[in-house]
Image (cartoon, rainbow, N blue to C red; front, side, top):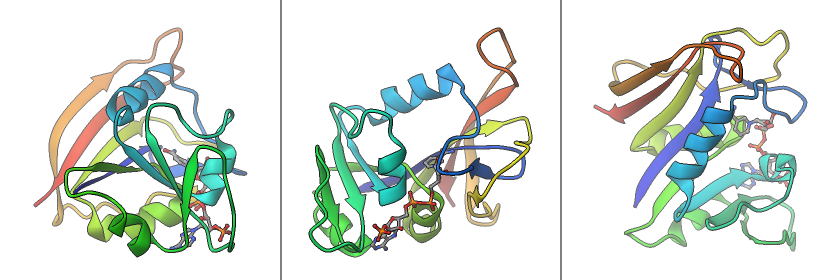
Length: 163
Ligand SMILES: NC(=O)c1ccc[n+]([C@@H]2O[C@H](COP(=O)([O-])OP(=O)(O)OC[C@H]3O[C@@H](n4cnc5c(N)ncnc54)[C@H](OP(=O)(O)O)[C@@H]3O)[C@@H](O)[C@H]2O)c1
């Protein structure tokens, strides 16, 4: 199984506020869709609830929750990360799509990180991506994009692999 963490982080690694994303970057959403479609996305219950139209189409949706018997349309619910990962096939590409609690739990297990590094500081945040230790993570590629009429600040798509 390949395990990838995918996240959009600001300069301080902030990722959200009041269960919402911090920035609206159409190219980030496009990249997210193109990377994850046809694969498996694994998320915490709060991130699932933040999705405007519920489960994302054309992907296997897995949600973690400790609530016994919780049913979510279009998603499989598991009570632990271990059980969720044990349900995945060896050839499955699993993208951890958040939120903060999932990123913290899954970072030690991840093979790669696909980050959108946003060159701005959100004025308010209440959840953060964990620190990315350069002794563990090697930058593999960086695709920097300027601000434009649809993107209020510069950003870069940065992929890291475990050393
Ligand atoms: N910038 C980005 O790329 C990005 C991406 C995704 C999300 N976000 C943001 O992140 C924030 C949400 O993050 P969050 O950390 O508050 O919530 P979260 O990780 O999305 O969800 C937390 C919930 O997941 C369940 N959970 C987590 N670990 C579990 C485990 N090991 N076993 C069983 N259940 C488990 C629990 O649900 P129960 O309470 O039901 O037990 C827990 O309350 C939002 O602001 C969202 O917008 C940002």
